[in-house]
Length: 190
Image 1 (tube, one colour):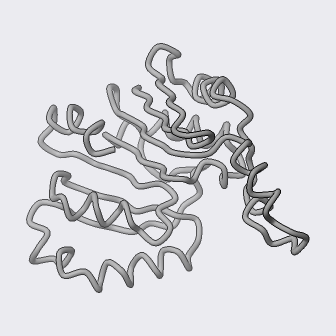
Image 2 (spheres, rainbow, N blue to C red; image 1 turned 135 degrees about the vertical axis):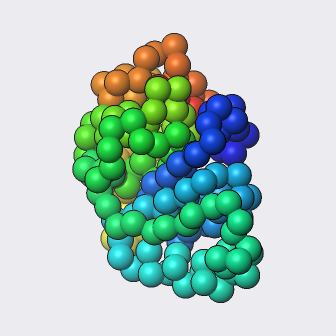
């Protein structure tokens, strides 16, 4: 993601990067520790995930206020379908292994497009439905298996491309790559 974001960040003196559905803050911490961005926002709907992200940030000496010479790091509770940010206020938005958990994908795609600046970039990873089919064959009957925890099942790359187009992204500015049998990497530019 950082390599994909580099050209966008190089064009501005003040860059804003959002890590959407940051969970425990793994990528939020990586973005902040790189000291490449002016502002890093780790966002999640779950207060417990943000609490854990905050705990991990506080435990990391590389993320102390003295260590972060350029980056302002913040955690924000929000719904990706209703992002409380101004239009065209974000340079880059990352969503790692998250989209399949979003309840309203169309609202999320519209909101991501809305908050990105012109030329801003969206980088996401998610899974095709074949991933969850494989998991379900290993689940057993407990009813709490990983395959039952996702809200969304993406049948194909075209399903994801269509979603992003409905959100506002232009088809020729969307790149989707499949890694292995079911992991998907999405790169889209506004």
